[in-house]
Image (cartoon, rainbow, N blue to C red; front, side, top):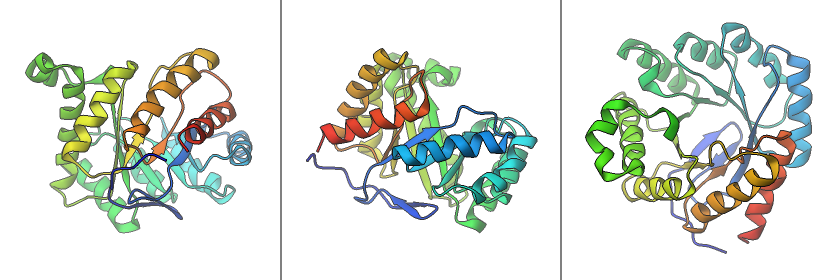
Length: 255
């Protein structure tokens, strides 16, 4: 068994991650979130496959309002993915989600960020900062690009973390994803030298089921073998049940 870096503990629903707790396998639904019956059905299938945390997307208010009913019918922590509109995050928190995946810098000004952070604080809900190589800030590229893309990924994460820490919010999980395996490894290594926030690990745009499984195994496995990572998600163009199965095989291969 590999030796893991000690990160701070964050609670997601009934689960604890970080601090030496088991690495958790996560997945994401492929249904339209307002279709509660279809979404719950898929989550139940994922639960049976061993999924421990499930993420759904809320691209509109209808989706955000459906989260409470979904939450009532499932047995694992529910994470919501929010982009740009802070009101969807507030509604999701009201509906009882267990974690919010958001980038504070893209939901508006300080007042909107503060509103989301205060709502999360009030209910003990953590925030995941999701940095992605495909959507890095241009000004950070201009400033840090000469040091390589992994450094830009790190600085993007730092910018988001500062927004939360300024509001004295530390119940944070971070992901630093790239489609290039080596860049992802380097980004996670750079981050872990400076921060002890729990890490969610994945490789973006991994590809088809066969090729994506191999790429994810190499990327996620390499990062985990360095002692980094508290949750994982295998991102492949396949039934999410297959994502969960591959995730567990990666963990088994590392002992």
